[in-house]
Picture 1 (cartoon, rainbow, N blue to C red):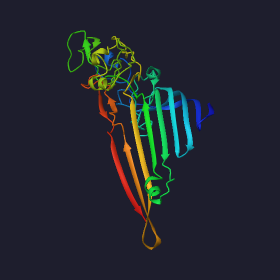
Picture 2 (cartoon, rainbow, N blue to C red; picture 1 turned 90 degrees about the horizontal axis):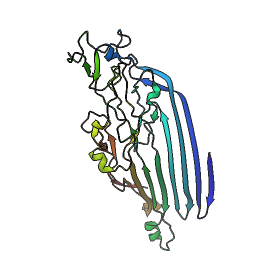
Picture 3 (cartoon, one colour; picture 1 turned 120 degrees about the vertical axis):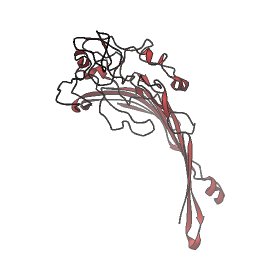
Length: 345
């Protein structure tokens, strides 16, 4: 749905709403040959549903996704060599399983998907924000061509006809899901373990590791910490020092249950640091007299990436046992300039 209005000064405003829903999407389960409570019932031994097979990758078509987005666009049509456009978008996408690509790659997803599926029998448990869901984004583009109205041909050739352009993107960052890859570590009624397992005749009465639903897959979801499932007002310093007050200890393990159970932390509830990047280009063709009435043409072109030289931090460590948990571990490229000159005749 779209509404457009012509405004003075060659401006056009446009408001848009778009929604989409997709059903029967492919879901790739990293291992369907497992069940909740396996390690509890079998005293720490990974038995599986079918003991004649190991891990089994399994694909189904029971995924669902829905997205709703609003956008406002203000643009200036080309006049006097100048054209500009700005678009602000806000929205949300929900699904059970997805991937995301880097913010500067131009791709939404990276194309690789093999889980994680937390519960084999409860896909809705992990329904939440899509891995590529960016809640707010502003993009501005502009081009300007310098006029060629000089009386001198030399001035026109040097100063006129330059083309300048830029793309500025600001967004709120990609989400992440804080989990643990620690294995199940049983607490036995006898008080002792042998090789990480409980002796025969005892029972498992607790778990000091991860894999809270005890299905043999080394991924566990903690409970929501006391400060909630969303943080606001975070800055670069927080992502360098650690965004979670108390670190991994702030994320409590779920209460132990004989059937195995995961925690309450929603999928992708925390945002990575936002993205802010301006790329700028400039260029011009020059004509120079050459031999035998030919003309030599020079093309001068320059490209400036990340003009603000902003530290766009990425790769927030979401694995609780890691020493860098809650910290950004990488960043996108710093400012760089490339200039090229080409001659043709």
